[in-house]
Amino acid sequence: MAERVTEPRDRQQDEEARGLARPLGVRSDASGRAGDETAGPAQAARQAIFELRDVAVAYSGKPAVRGVSFDIGKNEITALIGPSGCGKSTLIRCLNRMNDLIPGATVEGTVAYHGQDLYAPQVDAVEVRKRIGMVFQKPNPFPKSIYDNVAFGPRVLGMKGNMDQIVQSALERAALWDEVKDRLKTNAFGMSGGQQQRLCIARCLAVEPDVLLMDEPCSALDPISTGKIEDLMLDLKREYSIVIVTHNMQQAARVSDRTAFFTVELGDQEHRSGRVVEFDDTATIFTNPSDPRTEAYVTGKVG
Amino acid sequence: MSAHGQAIGRADPKRRAKDRGFLALLIVCVGISVALLGVLLVDIVTDGIPRLNFDFITSFSSINADQSGIQAAFWGTIWLMGVCALFIVPVGVATAVYLEEYADETRWYNRLIELNIQNLAAVPSIVYGILGLAFLVRGPLSLGPTVLAGGLTLGLLVLPVVIIAAREAIRAVPPSIREGSMALGATQWQTIWKQVLPASIPGIATGVILALSRAIGETAPLIVVGAATFIAFNPDGLDSFFTAMPIQIFDWISRPSNDVNDYLPLAAAGILLLMIMLLLMNSIAIWLRNRYEQKW
Image 1 (cartoon, each protein chain N blue to C red):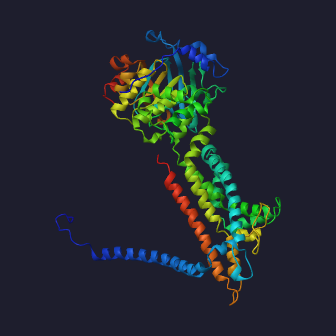
Image 2: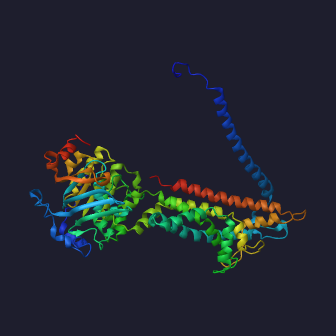
Image 3: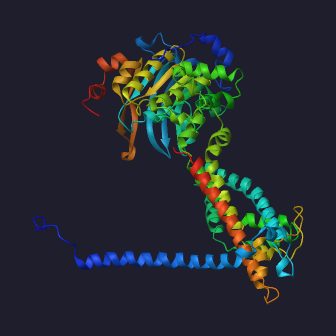
């Protein structure tokens, strides 16, 4: 296994340097209510990076997921699990406004990020995505060289600095540098699926985000590549906050700190939409869930 | 009871006969089209080969069939294609980008544009000639029967072909590439300019070459626009009068030939030269497609 080279950095200082601590827009009325209504004993110590309050997403008026309220902790891995069609992917795509790209998608409720409403009119979706990176289900490298894949983000964002160093550092943090350092100029399509997915992670890390969203990042990978990505996630959570959608319950149990369990419900006009059944520490969800539906799902009786 | 237990024998003779008969019919049809093409080619090659030489390309048209050549028309065609390409590439690609990346298909005006582009591709070329005459040569722009007017007329004619090809090339770039780019904080324009367009260049280039290879053989719109049939100089600018290869060929064919001046071999040589250029362009298109086509 490749050697992991991570640079523990002073996060606070870093954020200030990059302007992350500054508000995205002018409005900041959400900042006062950080997690007070849901803060139970288990959540008291954590610092919330996202606060979701009654979030509902609809496609062309048809609700896909409704009534989602929970906090996503800083420097934690939060797993979203549940059966197909329960709105996990829809929800994760709200967190960096990727749903904006789907015509007819609407988001209601509040998605607060560092206390600011991500959907406030002054907030620019492009600015949001700069800070909240995303890794997709299927590795989607650009049809360019490995180097250009990583350098693309920093280049379009006009990041200053030595590009070779930015690329090397991102590849190192994604545990890919040793495997590709001799073929940086070759096409990314020549890599294995697992390497491609780590390249996509490196690509996100290169733009120095705050949060990594991962939508079933291992579903197209074999167990060895999956293991590498899980190790990587545990490594990265020291610097980043991670949200992962997964169908693999062992994966959720292995890597995550908190887990939200979603289910599909019949709503108005017989329309199916997703809801959160339970959100708690991963250990609690998997060993002592409070809702029978969660228990049935995590023990494999349903789904 | 089905035929489970029976031995597998020959098929029903009637069904076999029908099967073979259909295949024979297909072969006859293929044969007819290939034979027609073959006769045409042999006829043109036997007539034209003796005249197709370096002098033919470097001589101007002349009353004297023996001294006549295609130089003015050859360079006229090159100029026309240049103007045409400079017009269709930016306009065609920009239209395709708008329709594929920005247009909301639920809006009536976008659907109307789309419908019109499909229809424009099927409008007879003479209609474009009349459009060019009314709006470019005379009327609002009053460019006169110049290289610029001719090239733009041909450009309008093949613009739908370019738009349709470019749209297909852009659509072939998977949405995951756009998502990957946008998720890094790239704007929509950066995503299009740095990811989508580079990935669709082979398809767009192929479409442009095929569009030009349609434009190069067009005669009717150029006649309407007022291309000269007899010119003894090469175009020297956008405002220059011009003739083009199909026009020159048309002119030679329509002249009365006699023992002293036989124009038909000239026409055949012109057709050969035009076909060689066409084949060359189409080969480049095929090569581009095979060489750079992105496998996703």
